[in-house]
Amino acid sequence: MANYFSIFLVVLTVASGLIWLIDSFMFAPKRRERQAISSSANSDILAKDQDVQLPWLVDTAQQIFPVIAFVMVLRSFLYEPFQIPSGSMMPTLLVGDFILVEKFSYGLKDPVARKKFVDLGAPERGDVAVFKFPPNPQLDYIKRVVGLPGDTVIYRNKQLQIKPACDTAENCAPMETVELKFESRGDAYQQFSPLEKYTEQLGDVSHQIYRKAGRSNYINRYFQQPGTQNDEWIVPEGQYFVLGDNRDNSEDGRFWGFVPEENLVGKAVAIWISFEFDRVPSSWVPGWIPTGVRFERVGSII
Image 1 (cartoon, rainbow, N blue to C red):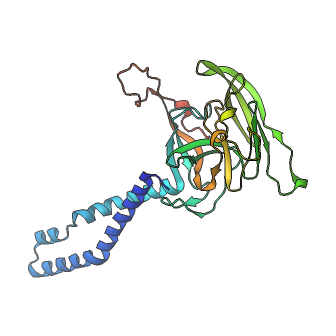
Image 2: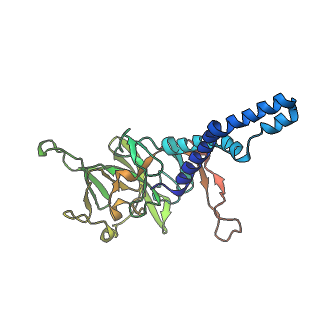
Image 3: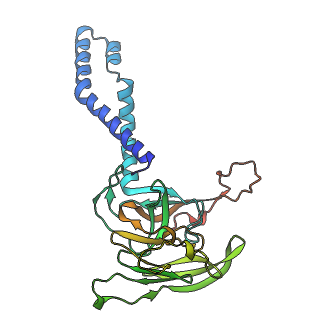
């Protein structure tokens, strides 16, 4: 289901449009008739001005309908803004980034029932996608698509391996280890531990990730798919496997499974503004007020 704001936009658009339409066909002609009779009877300009005045409800509907309809179409089918609330996609996306999500990349869906009615494309490996969190569809999540339908994905010893889907055993590609290149250490910290930055080559997409040094102790929490090892997943048809770029600080598909196609919202394409929130906890200023703007990130392509 859509979120409450989407439903509110649709209801307001339909209601204001119906009020305008009903008035145009039923009540406006009667008002014009009364105006013509009044004008021919006494030629009173004041009476004419009073008679032509629209009812408050109709006047309001005519003024807000074009604006609300434009916002609904833009937000439902073209682009929608989202805020990054956590560090699970660092260093690609930072807390305080506001991004634009291209809604039509993965097809057009109606804004209420979220059923696809025009198929325009599907996620590709390496896309940064926004989706409805499968365990709780009221929440919007953002992660990177690493596994496509039919792929076999392994995340072992903090190393990603992918075997692409194949139709027959003859044309199956072997399991491939995703290429990593070490960049730096200590650019950011997590729980007082320095993070290591790597460049990851995911198909045609080159992007950066963070990892903590040492072995992972999260494998006992991984989503267990029947018939596979603890750190291995076979992506079902019509679903996708996603990971956060901050690999040791991301609640992603490793822990809850796959993203169904119907949960997809769109593809993140750009950062339109980025705020800093570096205020100390003891400050009297509310924490939601930014401390600065990261101008160097504005307009960045994701």
